[in-house]
Length: 168
Image (tube, rainbow, N blue to C red; front, side, top):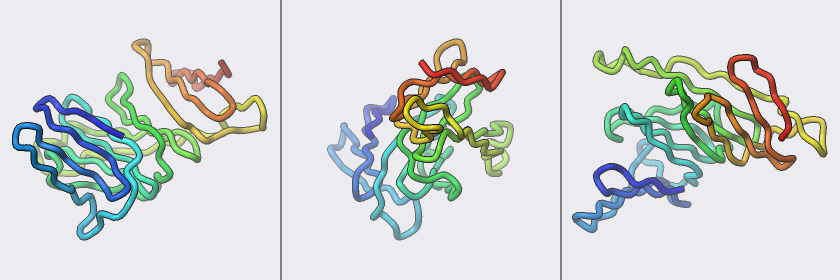
């Protein structure tokens, strides 16, 4: 995956980890999400306007709210295909095992505490060719707060308020 930040820098997910390319200096830096570990595949990157970077890999979900100086890891989310944010500033993570909603408590930003609040999993996604198709390849949330997920079985519409799911 690839993300261009507001400073003209480029975050690139690679087979060797996460890289940052500074356009003004021409310098590329490999960012360590875990100390001494740069040998995993980055599959998704997204940025929330209030300073939270979210990065997905085949093995875990990572986030940073201090400009990438310190990365925090959530082991319970893996096999990540896609990341976006909903209208409540939650990270919505599409994986091979369903959708995860990672909520953040931004009131903790100034006190140095961890802003990660909770993780909720959505599974048993309806599929047209099988009973369930939890392999979410892409997920987006529209301006009305409706979540759209693409699976191998098609498009699913999820209303987060009522938890109703419809196959599109």
